[in-house]
Image 1 (cartoon, helix red, strand yellow):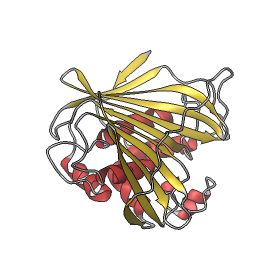
Image 2 (tube, helix red, strand yellow):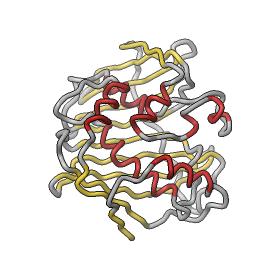
Image 3 (cartoon, helix red, strand yellow):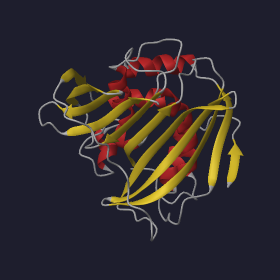
Image 4 (cartoon, one colour):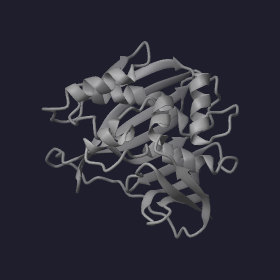
Length: 285
């Protein structure tokens, strides 16, 4: 295993450009590489913009999804490298799991580390998990696992089957209705740095097989969790499956149900009932 500590946050637009230029001819297995940064403190302007776009209240602690933004540039740097077997442009986020060991103060210095694992077979192609670990004072305080699908790709022989489903109970109670405007992808990209072209415009999304631009899965997850603000414990596990892409613009419904230990939730298209997100939120034991 090769561990590299970066001195600064990688520039995401340059990484996406490099990944696009080097998309052809990739293959092989996952690299045995870890990228890290040390002493990272959340930028107040980025945090305020993120809270505004996702509808989180501003407070003394980071939203449970915000550490993903801090680790994401390192994950993109890993995927943009030629040693990574799947082309980054067009990758679709299909599942995301977060384990928040405790709340994180907005001014805490954090050590970040990311790596890739579990190259798996999927009926639509191949998936890979991008892992992230966040520590403070030598203690791990947050863990993330993002599963991405490369449509039409092939996993190595003997690879396991992809694990992309999340089971929830009956969700009939509508908690909220959202109007998701056509600029939602661009607004989230501005605060997150995730400028994957499938989110930015209909023209760039069509180049990767989508009818229109699609919302970022992590924005949908964050928006759903923001609706539960004040009702979540500090130590929490959040597991969501991103189902059908949320095309922009759309009107969607958030359904929630309180269950033992937490909540089940779903985000669905308001007219067709198409499921965009299914998830579970549970207090850590």
